[in-house]
Length: 59
Image 1 (cartoon, rainbow, N blue to C red):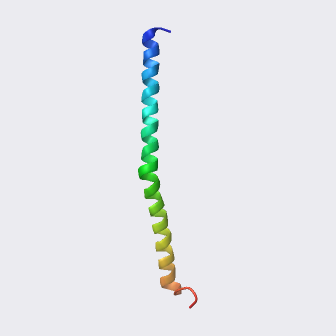
Image 2 (cartoon, rainbow, N blue to C red):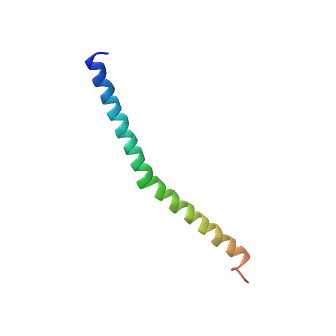
Image 3 (cartoon, helix red, strand yellow):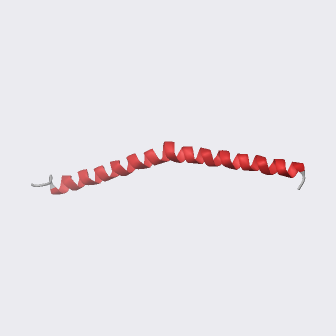
């Protein structure tokens, strides 16, 4: 393996690590909170619509 091959592999490794870190940050900072809010909001909307038709609990 020549020196230029090793340098290419190291640059490729750094590039892959950078993309993995950016992907992780995107998932944890943006996607997970958005999905959590959407899930909780959707669940609340479902319960609200259900109660429109059936009345509040205990009635």
